[in-house]
Image (cartoon, rainbow, N blue to C red):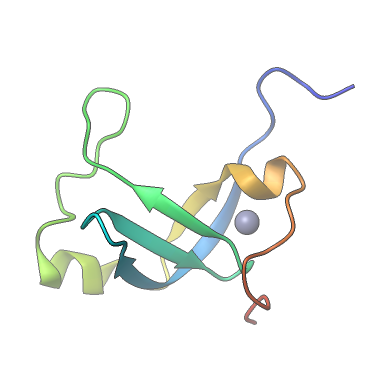
Length: 79
Ligand SMILES: [Zn+2]
């Protein structure tokens, strides 16, 4: 039985990329890729548009709900 609100697992950000639609994606150390969108109040990333702010967050942790769901990684996990 899976919980309604799985525990979110913090993972470090390895790099930022954009998809074909121009949406930001973070590549995480666990091998998952995850969209990040600035859509307050649910999703608050006002710094996404600023290259310096993005660079400052490489190595910072962000919750990976895909790990919490036990999904296989998109690419080999990085250490
Ligand atoms: Zn993950």
